[in-house]
Image (cartoon, helix red, strand yellow):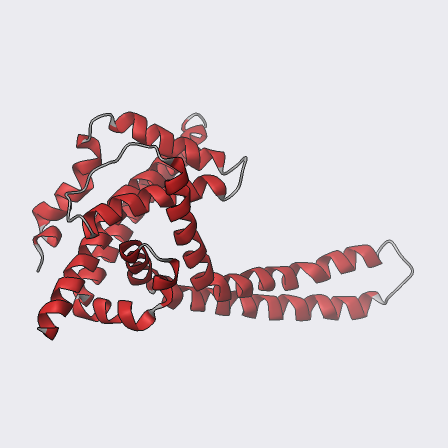
Length: 255
């Protein structure tokens, strides 16, 4: 197994962000961008994704040690981040459509029933039947959307790393190419996702402790912003290393 996934290797990746010069200001900018989503949706997140892609590309292409780059070259960050955002959206779109559509189908009869109570049109008993039907159909759509979401989400790590490595949007959809890399280092990708998910669960549980007090609950949004930034900067090198090892294994197998 690659030394990156040894105990020392994982510890090094989890702690490297705090060893960078000026890491506090870099985290502050990332957290501020997270907050900016409440004012301007999506656009600030694209910059965070671009920062994520910049770290990952340095690990894959330059074979560099994980490092926090300076925030700058905003145009390039947006360009790379927009590619990642669009690829993620397209992959998850079927599940998103089902879940959003299911929510709309569940809620639409409620508004219809509310409207009928203030008008002379329609029959309340018929509308109640529509309400029940809408709830059942909507819940089924939402459920199937959630079921579909998981396998689609599992396709993202190799697809996005391939996009970043090739610096090409369409590379994310060359499934045959990244599938071969995934197979060449399946356990590397699996371990990477397990580490990221484990860190996420621990951090989320820690942040939810804020809910237990009236004062600390106001710090919850700040905690979520820091979590998003931290997960981005540790996921990039972990997944980047899994991809790089997969490419090496594939080349060795074909040699």
